[in-house]
Image 1 (cartoon, rainbow, N blue to C red):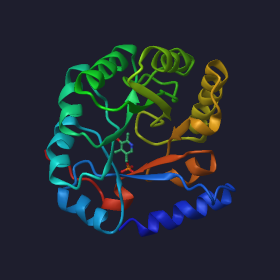
Image 2 (image 1 turned 45 degrees about the vertical axis):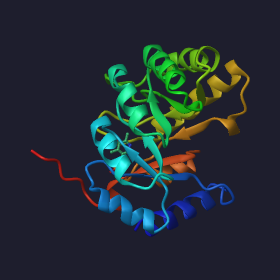
Image 3 (image 1 turned 45 degrees about the horizontal axis):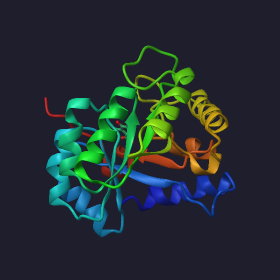
Image 4 (image 1 turned 180 degrees about the vertical axis):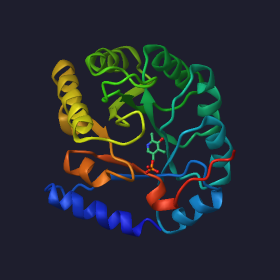
Amino acid sequence: MGGEVTARLQAAAARAGRADRLPRLVAVSKTKPVEAVQEAYDAGHRAFGENYVQELVEKAPQLPADISWHFIGHLQSNKVKALLEAVPNLSLLETVDSEKLANKLDSTVAALGRPPLAVFVQVNTSGEESKYGVEPQDCVALARHIQQGCSNLRLAGLMTIGMPDYSSRPENFQCLSDCRKAVCEALGLAEADVELSMGMSGDFEQAVEMGSTNVRVGSTIFGAREYKK
Ligand SMILES: *Cc1c(COP(=O)(O)O)cnc(C)c1O
């Protein structure tokens, strides 16, 4: 499971001259049963992504503690405590899109005595009306707030979905890369220390060729999702 995706990832990284530093493959398991996650785990996979707090809170305790969970859905401040309490092995929160959410995460991590939590800033790179993600021109301010005002968070990178319909265009990837450049210049960071989370089932190879360090692949690994009606 996922072996074919890994091979495609390796080939894309090689084309981009990055065969020595493979992007992380986050297997997106939303709507899939714990058995499917366990099967991928047994095959050696460790990084998994979930979108819904309720679903992750239910699944995580049933699965091995050394899984690295990535939260990749929209997160409301009033769900932060439930998420962090139930998932001690949450390794990356990819969707910080407001100072309010950053502050809530920061204070909750402190209150729970957790080690600093790695976060990505989510950017709306489509230029279209979208509920989630900061506008590109606002990413530096939010990144600065996290770095300088949230001592319990670690600014680890930037994330984008792409278009509102969950497809992506090369412009989306280029936009996120430009955002990273701006953040690094403003905050004095090295680009190698700031990740780019971009690329999904339909476009992860192109994303890797354009600099992605973290691809989020669901349906190509687990099969199409069936939503309960
Ligand atoms: C569902 C989802 C993915 C995975 O999508 P696929 O097209 O199934 O690979 C990646 N990122 C986010 C934010 C998602 O919600």
